[in-house]
Image (tube, rainbow, N blue to C red; front, side):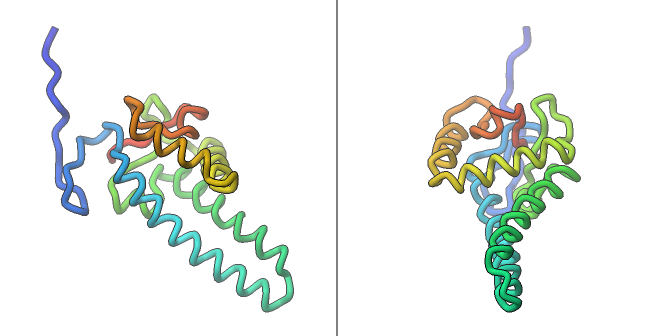
Length: 152
Protein backbone atom coordinates (compact mmCIF):
# COMPACT_ATOMS: atom_id res chain seq x y z
CA UNK A 1 0.00 0.00 0.00
CA UNK A 2 1.01 3.61 -0.48
CA UNK A 3 1.91 6.08 2.20
CA UNK A 4 -0.47 8.62 3.57
CA UNK A 5 0.55 12.21 3.10
CA UNK A 6 -0.99 15.04 5.06
CA UNK A 7 -3.63 16.94 3.10
CA UNK A 8 -2.46 20.15 1.47
CA UNK A 9 -2.99 23.32 3.43
CA UNK A 10 -4.00 26.74 2.26
CA UNK A 11 -4.07 30.09 3.97
CA UNK A 12 -7.27 30.65 5.98
CA UNK A 13 -8.94 34.05 6.42
CA UNK A 14 -7.23 34.64 9.77
CA UNK A 15 -3.79 33.47 8.56
CA UNK A 16 -3.83 29.94 9.94
CA UNK A 17 -3.37 26.82 7.84
CA UNK A 18 -6.52 25.13 6.55
CA UNK A 19 -6.47 21.49 5.42
CA UNK A 20 -7.70 20.74 1.91
CA UNK A 21 -11.33 20.63 0.86
CA UNK A 22 -13.31 17.74 2.29
CA UNK A 23 -11.06 17.37 5.34
CA UNK A 24 -12.63 17.87 8.79
CA UNK A 25 -12.83 21.56 9.68
CA UNK A 26 -10.71 22.76 12.59
CA UNK A 27 -12.29 23.52 15.94
CA UNK A 28 -11.10 27.12 15.63
CA UNK A 29 -12.79 27.56 12.23
CA UNK A 30 -16.04 26.11 13.58
CA UNK A 31 -16.01 28.28 16.71
CA UNK A 32 -15.24 31.48 14.78
CA UNK A 33 -17.97 30.65 12.24
CA UNK A 34 -20.42 29.96 15.04
CA UNK A 35 -19.65 33.29 16.74
CA UNK A 36 -20.19 35.14 13.44
CA UNK A 37 -23.51 33.33 12.93
CA UNK A 38 -24.71 33.98 16.46
CA UNK A 39 -23.95 37.69 16.18
CA UNK A 40 -26.06 37.82 13.00
CA UNK A 41 -28.88 35.82 14.60
CA UNK A 42 -28.72 37.91 17.78
CA UNK A 43 -28.99 41.21 15.86
CA UNK A 44 -31.97 39.98 13.81
CA UNK A 45 -33.64 38.51 16.92
CA UNK A 46 -33.08 41.79 18.78
CA UNK A 47 -34.81 43.70 15.99
CA UNK A 48 -37.70 41.21 15.96
CA UNK A 49 -38.05 41.45 19.74
CA UNK A 50 -37.97 45.25 19.62
CA UNK A 51 -40.60 45.47 16.88
CA UNK A 52 -42.92 42.97 18.59
CA UNK A 53 -42.57 44.83 21.89
CA UNK A 54 -43.65 48.05 20.17
CA UNK A 55 -46.92 46.40 19.20
CA UNK A 56 -47.25 44.69 22.61
CA UNK A 57 -46.59 41.12 21.44
CA UNK A 58 -43.81 40.29 23.93
CA UNK A 59 -44.35 36.52 24.12
CA UNK A 60 -44.69 36.29 20.37
CA UNK A 61 -41.41 38.18 20.04
CA UNK A 62 -39.57 35.48 21.96
CA UNK A 63 -41.08 32.76 19.79
CA UNK A 64 -40.29 34.69 16.62
CA UNK A 65 -36.70 35.19 17.77
CA UNK A 66 -36.33 31.42 18.24
CA UNK A 67 -37.88 30.90 14.82
CA UNK A 68 -35.36 33.33 13.29
CA UNK A 69 -32.50 31.21 14.59
CA UNK A 70 -33.99 27.96 13.32
CA UNK A 71 -34.86 29.52 9.95
CA UNK A 72 -31.30 30.84 9.59
CA UNK A 73 -29.69 27.45 10.20
CA UNK A 74 -32.24 25.62 8.05
CA UNK A 75 -32.01 27.94 5.06
CA UNK A 76 -28.23 28.22 4.87
CA UNK A 77 -27.30 24.64 5.80
CA UNK A 78 -30.13 23.30 3.64
CA UNK A 79 -29.36 25.34 0.54
CA UNK A 80 -25.54 25.40 0.41
CA UNK A 81 -24.26 23.79 3.60
CA UNK A 82 -22.74 27.15 4.52
CA UNK A 83 -24.06 29.80 6.85
CA UNK A 84 -22.56 33.27 6.51
CA UNK A 85 -20.02 32.41 9.22
CA UNK A 86 -19.19 29.12 7.49
CA UNK A 87 -18.60 31.01 4.22
CA UNK A 88 -16.17 33.39 5.93
CA UNK A 89 -14.29 30.42 7.42
CA UNK A 90 -14.48 28.31 4.23
CA UNK A 91 -16.24 25.36 5.86
CA UNK A 92 -19.41 23.42 4.99
CA UNK A 93 -21.88 21.14 6.77
CA UNK A 94 -22.41 17.85 4.92
CA UNK A 95 -23.63 14.32 5.49
CA UNK A 96 -20.97 11.79 6.45
CA UNK A 97 -20.90 10.65 2.83
CA UNK A 98 -20.08 14.24 1.79
CA UNK A 99 -23.46 15.09 0.30
CA UNK A 100 -25.44 18.28 0.85
CA UNK A 101 -27.71 18.18 3.91
CA UNK A 102 -30.96 19.36 2.37
CA UNK A 103 -33.58 21.25 4.34
CA UNK A 104 -34.83 18.35 6.48
CA UNK A 105 -31.42 17.48 7.91
CA UNK A 106 -30.54 21.18 8.16
CA UNK A 107 -33.70 21.80 10.20
CA UNK A 108 -32.88 18.92 12.57
CA UNK A 109 -29.25 20.05 12.88
CA UNK A 110 -30.34 23.63 13.64
CA UNK A 111 -32.88 22.40 16.19
CA UNK A 112 -30.23 20.34 18.00
CA UNK A 113 -27.76 23.25 17.96
CA UNK A 114 -30.36 25.62 19.40
CA UNK A 115 -31.44 23.07 22.00
CA UNK A 116 -27.84 22.47 23.06
CA UNK A 117 -27.58 26.12 24.07
CA UNK A 118 -31.07 26.28 25.55
CA UNK A 119 -30.20 23.44 27.94
CA UNK A 120 -27.74 25.40 30.11
CA UNK A 121 -25.05 25.05 27.41
CA UNK A 122 -23.95 21.68 28.81
CA UNK A 123 -24.53 19.85 25.49
CA UNK A 124 -22.68 22.69 23.73
CA UNK A 125 -19.68 22.25 26.03
CA UNK A 126 -19.75 18.49 25.43
CA UNK A 127 -19.90 19.20 21.69
CA UNK A 128 -16.85 21.46 21.90
CA UNK A 129 -14.89 18.75 23.72
CA UNK A 130 -16.00 16.18 21.16
CA UNK A 131 -14.94 18.43 18.26
CA UNK A 132 -11.49 18.69 19.81
CA UNK A 133 -11.09 14.98 20.54
CA UNK A 134 -12.87 12.92 17.85
CA UNK A 135 -11.17 11.91 14.62
CA UNK A 136 -13.73 13.60 12.36
CA UNK A 137 -14.12 16.57 14.75
CA UNK A 138 -17.84 15.90 15.10
CA UNK A 139 -19.97 17.68 17.69
CA UNK A 140 -22.72 15.89 19.57
CA UNK A 141 -25.37 16.97 17.05
CA UNK A 142 -23.15 15.74 14.19
CA UNK A 143 -22.87 12.28 15.75
CA UNK A 144 -26.61 12.09 16.38
CA UNK A 145 -27.51 13.09 12.81
CA UNK A 146 -24.60 11.59 10.91
CA UNK A 147 -23.31 14.95 9.68
CA UNK A 148 -19.87 16.57 9.60
CA UNK A 149 -18.30 19.95 9.00
CA UNK A 150 -15.54 19.96 6.42
CA UNK A 151 -13.33 22.48 4.69
CA UNK A 152 -14.99 23.87 1.58
